[in-house]
Length: 262
Image 1 (cartoon, rainbow, N blue to C red):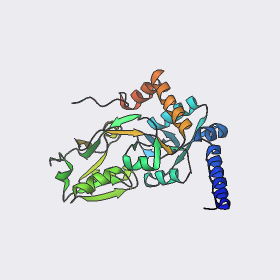
Image 2 (image 1 turned 60 degrees about the horizontal axis):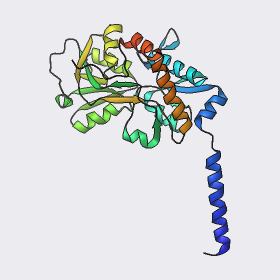
Image 3 (image 1 turned 180 degrees about the vertical axis):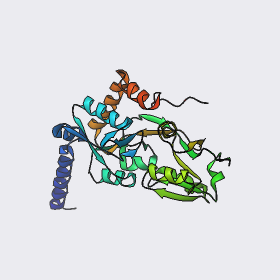
Image 4 (image 1 turned 180 degrees about the horizontal axis):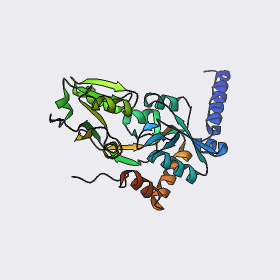
């Protein structure tokens, strides 16, 4: 390799290193802007939904508490679940706070906060259901309702033989379940008590059908300062009792801890 080419390569490497070093961490961007752009469905009670035209729910209050600890305000953007992670990858917002399971596949694309809820997949069935659906295998040849783009679909597909029906959100498939258009639905176990308590749909909790799942807050990779600040904010609201207060308001327990065995 001649000297001229070596100099060009050295200059190129120096420029690339300088540009990388000068790239703003997401924390700096958020603080300069004064807002944390938070994406969520807005149709997923009790986590996030609209009440009298305003966003409400556990994750809305959590987002506001975290933003306050970061010294900024939460700016909410809503959209269908199936598009939320793609929008995050495209830089349309800073974080998604919408019960995002921390999976190896998702960790290839995003970094995550520490988990803020621990739950498990669980079936939802009609109150008058007589069939004994204890596992996903029991649903072979049956219709199962799921939200679009959820990792629950991968679980059901791995079993095989299940007629999977996907919907934009939980409202739609719960209505179809109540009307008998599907045989069961599946979602986060934390959702079930809220449905039983807050809706008039004739539904009940079914069997747990998967492993314990940890849910966290995804954001763009290579933002170490932001991750440290976000994890500290979570730890701070745990320490000062804010998290427990918000959690107990919506779930009657601390959802950052594993559910008690029955």
